[in-house]
Image 1 (spheres, rainbow, N blue to C red):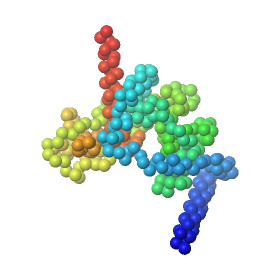
Image 2 (cartoon, rainbow, N blue to C red; image 1 turned 90 degrees about the horizontal axis):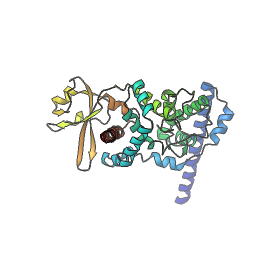
Image 3 (tube, one colour; image 1 turned 30 degrees about the vertical axis):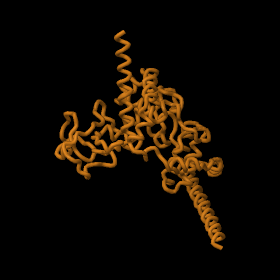
Length: 329
């Protein structure tokens, strides 16, 4: 009897879930038709072609940002990724110089973003974007509303760019191309940097580089300003000063008054954040400035921003050393 009841309950739960999914899909179709003029029948047919992917639901439950810093950094701060960054910079030096001049974003930051996101275009994702966003929009209640919004943005960009929505591939979360833009980011920040009338972040490095630089510029990157410093501690760090995010909520003067210092001569009213990273033998403390916060607008993680920054510095130093060695011959 108990087993029979258990099976019946599971069947009922599955049926309720299917009905909820059907209702959400109908509401989505109605909204896209009313707000953006999509044909209801054609859109339902398109969504019927989307495949629910269990591997996508599994992947989103174990993001890399859940790792401690000392494990996270081993993924991105590698010789191969640094060497690849130097090669990418050498191959696209003119485009990167043009982007830096136009947007004020350093070449090494642009290169590092592309390196962390897709290893310079080697790993842009194996999932159909339609499948990823449909799976997460209709089968992942925790963030279903967000991913349904991204599905709508994806359908709009496909219409605007003349792209068959069943074709583009991306990450399990629907991020696309070499810079891994989600659809809303593509529509707002992707740039036609070579002026050919298209915004191709999959195959065109001019548009990839311009799009990343444009993203940072529109998120208020400060040209020539510092990014982050290791903290020097004169006394134990007050818990209330350590942030889980990187939004500047304190001033450098307030940190100095608490015995937290950096090796830089900056005004006391400089906006800063103080955060900690897990190391094998404890924690390290860091002082992030506005530009560090801007990096986290690309991915809302201190781990991510630190990986981008440190990879950028490593690529820049390695390239400068190679140039100096060549000049000395």
